[in-house]
Length: 130
Image (cartoon, rainbow, N blue to C red; front, side, top):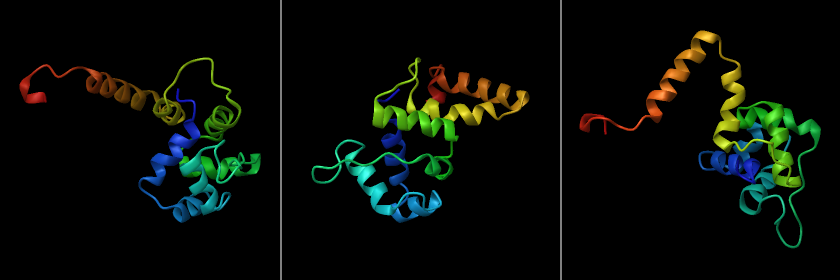
């Protein structure tokens, strides 16, 4: 897992969305300037001598909506970025983002995703597969 999964996720979203759209996407629980500072500086290197403050608990649901994940995942990301608390297991930001979505799948769809993931992770075996 990255030591800054919250910032990493915000940066990935900022690549396809401007800061005003990010503010709207989280139901305005964070301002566009907060998102800009988060993406550009991170939690501990805010503009000037300051830092970007962590989201309050009331903001987590809106941020989860923007991040397309669960409030629990957002809380884990906040714990990592602002407090240096990482989960016991090493998981990438990508895996953390997909985990709650995978948990919502029915058993049949999970099997399909599992087989697809195994296929995509397998090295190309023939020249035509490249």
